Every structure is written in C-alpha cells, then in structure tokens.
Length: 71
Image 1 (cartoon, one colour):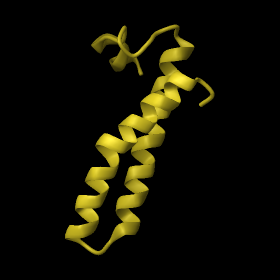
Image 2 (cartoon, one colour):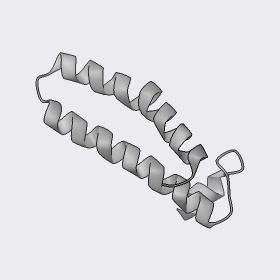
Image 3 (cartoon, one colour):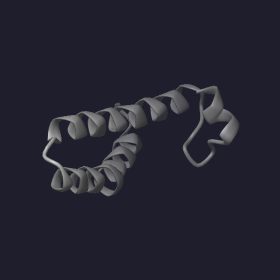
C-alpha cells in the first residue's frame, strides 16, 4: 500500500473500528491470539479492497454497490 491516502484511511479504520473491538473482546475473554489474527485479517482485507478500487480507477467515495459486488 503505497498511496498516502490509503494509509490514512486504513489507519483511521484500524483506530476507530478494529482496535476498539479488539480491546473489548480481549477484555471479555482471554484468547487474544484469535482476535488479533482476525483484526490483522480485517485490516489486510480493507487494504486489498482499496488497492482493488485504485486498480479500477475508482475512489472510495465513488464506489457503488455494484462495484463491491464485482470485487
């Protein structure tokens, strides 16, 4: 992921969506390994999706449901 805008989006997604969920689940149960793997996978999937959009000349705001279904 070399696009600065993608880095910013992924960092915000990880900070505001993935990490709070990871913290909540790790406090509720003592199996952080599974939760950290899921968090890592979620972040990687988001990064791949942004790369996929970029390869098709799309931006996240311009992405439509039909584009997501093509993914």
